[in-house]
Image (cartoon, rainbow, N blue to C red; front, side, top):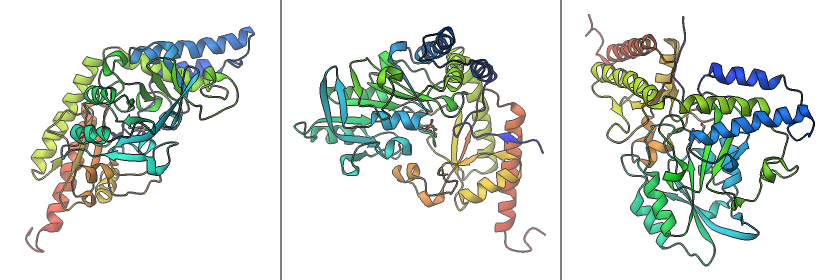
Length: 390
Ligand code: PLP
C-alpha cells in the first residue's frame, strides 16, 4: 500500500533543494572557525544560509543566531538574564500563552513560579484583555516582563494576532518573543512589521533537516546570556562547532519558502478546503477546530464526538494515511490536548490533525477522504443496533 504522509506540522519532508545543499556541505572538510581556505569555505556556507534565513523574515543576517533547533533557541531566549550592550537587564516574569508548544510553555530557564499563562478565547486566540490585565499588574520594580506568544498554533493552525500583542507588550516596556516555527513559510513574516524582539524558527518544519533552528533578534544590543558556553561561535551566543550541513539545508529550505509563497499557500489551502468539505459531507457532526478564525492554510484539526483520537489515528494508519493526534507528545504517547483544554473544549475528546504541504497531491487528498469515509461508515455500522444493517 502506498503511504500518504499528512503530518507536515510534526515534520515536513526534506526538500530536494535542502538535501542538495546538505550533501555539498557534507563534503567540506573544514571547520568554520579555521582561517585556512577549507575553514573559510565552511564559513561561507554558514554565511549564505544566514542570509537566506534572514530574508525569509525580512531581517538582517547579522541578527540570525543558529541553534540545534527551535527548542534550543527557545531555551536560550527564555531566561531572566539578558545583556543590553554592556549593562544587564533583568526579566522577572515570563507570560506564555496557554497554547504554546512545550518548548516555550515549559518556560526555559525561568523558575516555574515566575511563569504565568495567558488564557486564550474559546476560538483559540490569545486573550488580549487578559494579557493587558497581567501586564498592568506586573511589578516592574522586580524586573521587566517577557511575553511569548506563537505566530500560529501547531495543533489547530490558528494564527495569533502577534502585531496586537507586540503593541501591548511594548506599551508595557516588555520583551516579546514569537515562536514562528509553524508560521514560517506559510504566512508572510516581516521582522520589521511584527514588532517582536525575537522570532524563533525551526528548519525541519519548512523542509530543512531536523536538528537546526534559529532565533532572529531585532538588533544585536539586547541578547540573552548564552545557554551553551564555550567557544566563540555565533558571536559567543551559542558555543560549539556549527552543524554546517544542517545549517546549509536550513538556508536552502528558507530560500525555497520565500519564493512564490502566495501561490503555493493558495494551492495548499484549496486542497485542505476540499478535504474538509468532503469530511463534513461524510460526517456532518465533525468539529473542525478554529474554522471560524484565521488559520494556516495547510492544517485541519478535527474531532468526531465519541471517537477517540488514538482510535482514529490507528484507523487512518491502517488505511495508509499518516496523520497525528494533535495531542501526541514527544514520547509517542497520546495525552489530553492542552490546546483544546485551553480553548475550553472537552479535551478528553481529543482531535486528529491533518497537515499538508507543497508536495501533497490531489490523489493523496482523495486517499485521505476515502479513508475517512470508510472509517465513518464502519463507526456507523458498529453503532447500529445488531441486525439493523440486515
Ligand atoms: N514550536 C512549535 C510551534 C513547534 O511546533 C515545534 C515542533 O514541534 C517546536 C517549537 C520545537 O521545534 P524543534 O523540533 O526544532 O525543537
